[in-house]
Length: 365
Image (cartoon, rainbow, N blue to C red; front, side, top):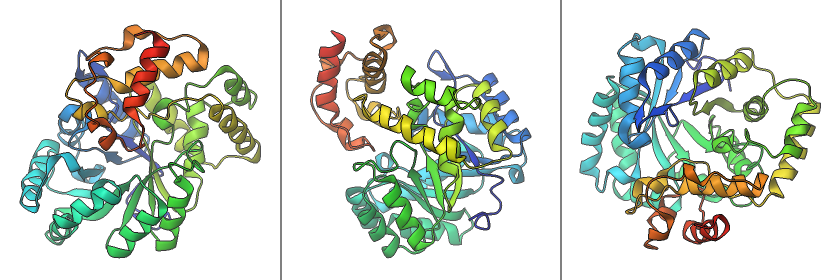
């Protein structure tokens, strides 16, 4: 669907969710270099949300992008997130805060964030969709979309009730493609049915498809070229109807590597597709926790337990037999109150409380 949203240059977007950090703050000089390299390569799509990086993402966008480049040089997506409103009257003030934080007068895309069956009912009761459509009529939003984490049936219901939705952001990667819990391909098919272009999030599953176990790595090494990230991103970008693929990049080298293979995009070859299938089979036998490191759980945890870091260590141990537990900062896992707020926020639907206990036992914490 290249003809849909032709203003999006090429197929690759910059997600402002995993920026480089120094002492808990965004590394602004490094991020500026990353933005400059991305734009210089001919790309122009940026994605943020109010809660990303504890509120630092929007401000970093203003400092590194919107205050330094004319408005026509980039497209900017923001989101209406569940945690920041309780009633319709909260939405416009929040939206204005987001515009100010980002330093713009309008958003090219504004997404109803992380929609699922339960959350959709809240958005409907607060007239969130209707409010954003009013903002669109006023020129403050160019396009209405959703990001989505639930079943194909729920997605079909949302798109049927609100045909005004213009795009859907989906978690889509070669590991989740036919996973019965994520149902990436089923949701993708619903978008095709409704004629909605797809924006891909988590194409490398929070880095899980970059840091591979040795037996999987040997398969990709045997192809004779290309990085693990390149196979994952190109896999997602190769499906009809995929308009852009987001990557939450953390270093300048990641930007340079990704724009190099996406500048002149080509789908995976038959040999590469076969390699991806073999790698998928190996990963599914690893018993890894499918955490993407989005940190929505840490945003709501009253004890500030760094759940993604804990799970990353456990995955390292299951993958390689070794784990560096010194990387686990913040609140201690034994301080978990069992309140379940983390599980309510988790877009992957993980049983976090149970998994935290497993991590404590396996890692000896």
